[in-house]
Structure formats: structure tokens, C-alpha cells
Amino acid sequence: MDPTGRTGGPRPAEGAPDGFWLTAAIQLSRSCPPSSTAFSVGAVVVSAQGQLLAEGYSRRDDPHDHAEEVAFRGIDPEDPRLREATVYTSLEPCSSRASRPRSCTELILSTPVPRVVLAWREPALFVDCDGAERLTAAGRTVVERPDLAEGVREVNAHLLN
Image (cartoon, rainbow, N blue to C red):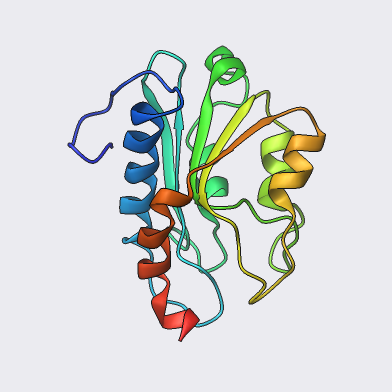
């Protein structure tokens, strides 16, 4: 659900629409159970028409869940809307992880989703992440919105002090 409690919003596009949906992802990250060993992340998958297709946040169903992983569990991988969808994630998709066989970057690359919008690059606290670079190298559009990164840092302040 988006920050207003609806299941739809503006069509994904750079500027205000991206800010709207990325804010929704950041709000979801506030629902994460606390952890001293992992970031709190929220993710939403939005159709080209502005329909919320799926959402997730870290540790929602399992202590090892990542936000993008939870979101993609909520949508049929054959859904044709994924070909024009955007993934909004509060933190750069992970490029390696110990708790699951595939990283969130690999998960996104296994879908036809062409566009990823993130607020904050993952700091090298747990791993040296290069998810944005891998997505870009694979031909996906990656948009960074550092103007919204402060909200992500706030949610994860317990890890950064």
C-alpha cells in the first residue's frame, strides 16, 4: 500500500512520481523487525500505469528475508506488467548475501523489470555492494534519489552509530 493507504498512485517517472513511490518504500522499511546485523529496507513494485503490484520489507516473514525478495514473492513472475514495471527500494539491492543462494540484484535480473529506483547506496558495513553497477551493466535503468537517503539513514541509525 502506498503512503496514502491506496493501492495506486502516479505512473513511475523521474521526479515527483519516483519520489512518491520511493517514499512508500522508505515507509515500509519502518515496519522491519530490528536487527543488529542487517539493514531495514522497504521495496515496492509498481506497474507503468501506477498500480502497486507488490511490496515487501526486510525480515517480514523470516529473519533472513530481504525486501525485494518479499515483494517478488507477492507477484507472479510471468505477470506481463513486470516488463514495464519499476522496483522502488530504499537501499541499493544487495549483490551478495550469506543467507540465501541469490542476491536481490540477481533476483531482479531474473525478472524482466527494466527499471530500479533507490534512495541510498548500501554502505560497506556488512558487504561491499555493487548492485547498482551490476543492474546497469545488464542494461537496466538505475535511478538514484539521494535527496531521500536521509530517511533511509534514519531508519538504520542504530547500525550507523
